[in-house]
Image (tube, rainbow over all chains, first blue to last red; front, side):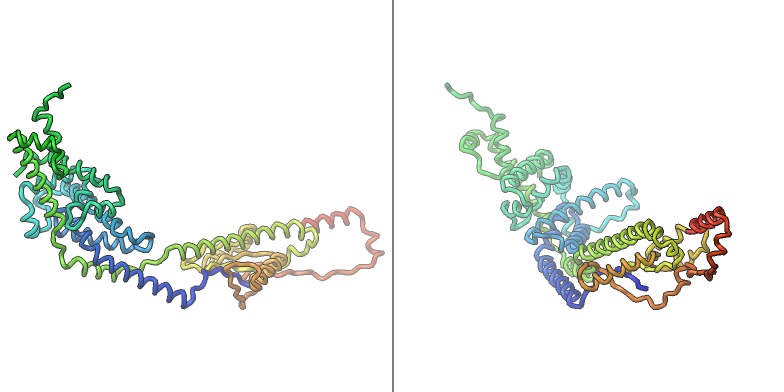
Amino acid sequence: MQELALIQPGRSAEEEFAQEAAAVALRREFEERLAECGPLAYRVARGVLRNSADAEDVAQEALLRAYRRFERLRDRARFRAWLVRITFRLAIDRVRSSKRREVRETLWSRSAPRPSTEDIAANSEFQTHLDRAMEELPEKQRLVLLLAAMEGHSLEEVAETLGLPVGTVKSRLFFARKQLAEKLRCHRK
Amino acid sequence: MPSKMKTCEDYRVSLMDAAASDAAPSHELSLHLDACLACSRAFAEEKQLFGAIDAGLRAETNAKVPTSLLPRVRAQLNEQPVPRHSWVPVGAVVVAAVALLAVIVFARGLGRESSGVDRDMQPRAKNAPPAAIHVASIADGPVKTASTTEKHNPSRPARNAQVTQAESLTVLISAGQKRAIEALVASVRQGEAKANIVLIEQTEASPQDTGVAPLAISPIELKPLADLSSESPLEDGKHGVEEFEQF
């Protein structure tokens, strides 16, 4: 009498070793990009959230999410753009969820994160109006505006990051600035 | 034909566009700005507004990155499972499932053939103890078990306790099916057929394990031909029908 048993294909020690080596290489490659792109993620989050603590949380979440899916990214050269989009999306989601929370909770029970000195300095009246006007912009225009405002980002680099033609970036930037000016004209300094 | 004289209102749009695009005003607009103090002031205010917008955006987007960010992320990375290619286990599971299905279908197909042909050819083989083959998937979780003989003979004493506790699928087949399975196994061993099958000798097999009673043949009584001729044809035929029905 015989017994048939179906089993998973056995993995040899060589395969295990190769997988471990690949995982280590993946981790090393990600860490190299982390040092380069971590600040970018933070700045994108900060541009949307305008709060240091929230921006740090969102940047961390975006970087971890990027790490978990890093091996699925076929074109590693697109990592920067990929990370920007993940961070932007997470930041927008957080803004929306915090708005919903604000509606639910009463003002006295809400424990808002303590603003940093930088937050306080930036939180002038005009800045508040600017933030509000930014929130009303279409997301595509908003992202272009944020990236273009970052130091060391030329329009060509923004276009490359977003995978868009330079003309499209210029167009979005132009209309975004015009819309902001329309809303802020009565609040000018 | 002389062109219509443009007013300040006509220049307002192009003035704002020039400020928004941060580009130098056109030649025509420059001439107007030089001539019109009000538009020149409006243009300066627009440029100031866009300068304030840019400054506000730069203040937000070029904020100093906290030094705690990267160490925090690295610490979190250490707690993350190492990302692996997810298609490897999925593929293995699919291959195992397909192979299991193929074996079951193959066994059932042979079962139908033998029930149709072997019964007619060898009526007594029905009572032979079927060979038991355990088809087991070594998965992480327990596998739902079933027994073909349990379905066909519900009146038989239940072995549900044993069946449900077993972590393998038990298929009861006839001797002919067993030979076919053995042929398949031999071809797998020789490399003629590709399948992820491992053969394990079952050492503790016994008729009690299968739950099928062993074949019991009563002693055959031999009678002289002369005695048979005295029996009526009806009785002989009745006896034959009863015997046939037993099959």
